Length: 99
Image (tube, rainbow, N blue to C red; front, side, top):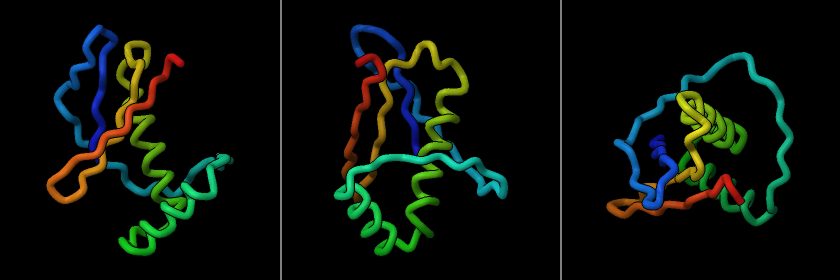
């Protein structure tokens, strides 16, 4: 999983990409999420095709990667980027934390 950090500035230039590896942990807390049904259907199809475990495992890893990325200096982060590598192409979704 790859996380890009952005510093507050007029141009959001990504820092050097950091590879974050999240090991499975035996003890976790429960979090309840409200997610659009269509989004869950897409995630479920992806999990079934790729055999990556379960929807819960995939979402847990994404949340843990986000937390790991926020550890260093969360005050300077105002956007989060999720980059999916699809073959030779990248698809990036930006989430603004200031809106």
